[in-house]
Image (cartoon, rainbow, N blue to C red; front, top):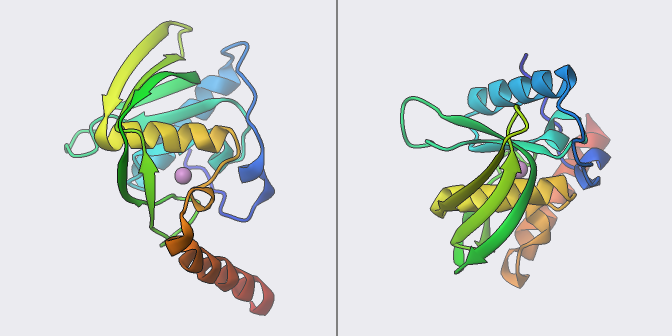
Length: 170
Ligand code: NI
């Protein structure tokens, strides 16, 4: 089932997701729905908060530049180490049409469980490392607008004011 994507300023995007203690049928269904939603929207990643759930899960498409997607489910993800830094434009399905220059680590080594409770260590770089930090941020209630420097603050203010106008007048 494709989930309704929660958009900013919904309060759930500011909540900290809680660790998954048991991989129940609910978790399976949620992961499946998150993958379906991410692929339909052409996203590289999708965090549980964005689908209205507060479990520490995100999904990521590890082959974003290929025709065939390779979705991976990351349960209770943790960063083990990181390296370097890159400044690049980044978007978010919860902020349609907003793209902000954000500095993120270049490489990440992370740990997560899969749907079968197996432990995995992943090493990723480039756009995938960026996606990992973006999605872990979501699970902690942190959003792209929290990362911007002084130059982009104006852009964020205009975007947020625009949302306010929309909710007031329609
Ligand atoms: Ni996002």
